[in-house]
Length: 354
Image 1 (cartoon, rainbow, N blue to C red):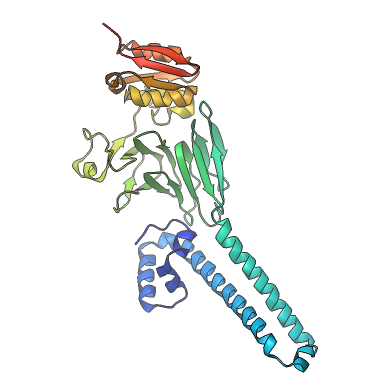
Image 2 (cartoon, rainbow, N blue to C red):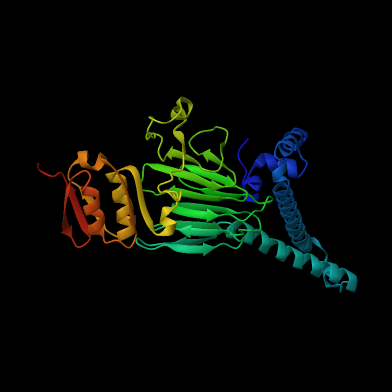
């Protein structure tokens, strides 16, 4: 069965509908078994069942009103002119009112579910966001976080393009989920950093505290369980695979690898979350990847004239207030390269002639 993370996931499942309205005994058996295997979703299932039953009742009212409207022309004229009794008038008025309310509710239900609230940062900009459920989010440069309508009430689902550090508020009834192009991360209450930029080949989820599960969207496999200091790195596209040098054989085949978050100094601070402390930290990272980070932090464009130089790996740490020229000069001091400005905000990097 699919991974159900919100009320909408259940409602849009035809099998679940037949279970909720008690139409199919086999579906009842199947979903009761699902509930036993996933007791943490009992609250979501109950809410989804109630929503479906309310929708069904609303449709019954609409059908009743339509049948009554079709019946009126068939009545004799004397009957049509008879003034209805007061009690019947109240019932009819109440029925019409309920029909109008039900129609409005169904309309709002179907069309408002797609509404989202979006938080976005520009290059060289970072934001701190407090979500309605109490979750703290730090959004890195050139990132976008979409929060679905009903967040904190019927779901806690967000969609991320870019990078975000999240201190997730605990709520067992509504698990917090982060969807990226390649991963879906499910947590109850934890601290996690998720990196999923659209222009990068790899995406990563680094668990700092608590527990979490990661689902690979491209693979119909069981969730990957993370412990504190675990990091899962996955290919954004099926054709791209993470480096296999440190990956266990089974994870190579699945398109991901497990790592441990990187401590980069004596204070045991983490490279993965260094950006939240205004630090630029690179640990054995290719210059091509470093360049993408510099582009976002300094709002520039970096072009490589030679593929060889873009693959060279560097380890360095900088304060984010450092000038770009200082960062480039520091990098080239270990493995030389040359660079020059070729446009208002464009830097060209090329091999140094020895």
